[in-house]
Each structure stands twice: as structure tokens, then as C-alpha cells.
Image (cartoon, rainbow, N blue to C red; front, top):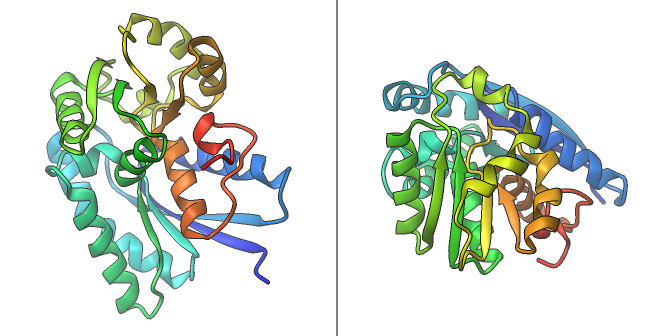
Length: 250
């Protein structure tokens, strides 16, 4: 029976959070379960979070998929939500199919997770209807993300755009600041809070604390990505950190 799994990640070159938060959740799971995980990345060039740079970066994802499939990873995650969502409504389905096709060509068919698709699915799993969202993006990109989420059937009741264009500056944010930032949202009628709709903006340390304060599910694109990866690996989704979605209930 398989007990060690290789987690592959297609990562923007300036993203340093996906390779800390994703392993942190899997390492936390290792404290309560037998499976073990190793982590492997391939990078796409991107420094500024603009629509033009995101499009150029997305074009490199297939090369990354090929490289990771050489390593025979067990699941592959595309670690940039806004790159997918800025390409047009429903694009996560197109991207997942294209990346999967690349692994098939390399005789290594691999389950694919995009952080964009994972967030949408995680919200569905939580039974979310009315949500609030925090992003680090500039306002026009945030509006694209909000439109994308609405098109998937959710009401976005309120959102905050922190308007940080430099991707390394996004990663440098203190996750505990979210304990104050979320209070600027109107949470009236909201049933789920997305405390980071960006896998580069750190939020993991704040999720359980905010959830305790507001009494509704709190999640992030990174948490949803871990949930989706565990599902693709047919593993139990209980993780000691990361809020309700990783409570093992789903």
C-alpha cells in the first residue's frame, strides 16, 4: 500500500508562499496520519501581478507540467489563482485539461489541481452561497476575480483589494494582519469568508483564529488546494490546521 506521495507544484517564479503553506498543511497532517509527502516545483516567470505578465506566465505552464511529470509526481497543482481567473470565466477547466493532456503526452497521466478551480470547489463543498473575499491584487484584477467567482454561482457580498502590485511584497504580508483587515468587511449575511483569494498572500496562521472569532467557515485558495489534492489522492482530508474545510467533515 502506497504511503509516500509526491506533490508537484507549478509556481510563479516570484511565489514563495505556496512552497511554505502547502507543505505546512501536509506536515501538520503527518502528525495524525501515516502518509508522508515530498514536494517538487517547476517555475513560470512572473514578477509584477499585471494581466500582461500573468498571460505570458500562463503560457509557460505546459513546459512546467512536462518537467514535473518527468518526476512522476502523484498530483500536480497550478499555484496561481489570478493567472487563471484573469484569462476569462471558467478558464480553470480549460487549464486543467491542457495541463493534464501534457502529462498524458509524457506517459505520466497526473491528476491536476488549479488553485482557482480548488477555491471554487472548496466553496461548493462548504455549501457557501454568500461570501466575502480579501485579495492583495490591484482593483481591476480583484474585480476580474470577483466576477469569476460570481459566474460560478456565488454571491460576493463584499471584498477588499489590498492593491499590492509587486508579487514579493504580497508574500511579505504578515498573515496576522488579516485579523484586523477582515474587520473592514461587511459580513452581514455572509456564510463563508475567503481570507486570501491568492496563494501568494500568506493567511494560514490567521485562518483558525478568525474562524473562532466570527463563527463561520474561513478558508483560502491554498487551503482549498490542499483539500483538492487530498481528494485527488483518495486520502482523508482531516488536517489539524486550515479551518473547517480541513476538519475531516468533508
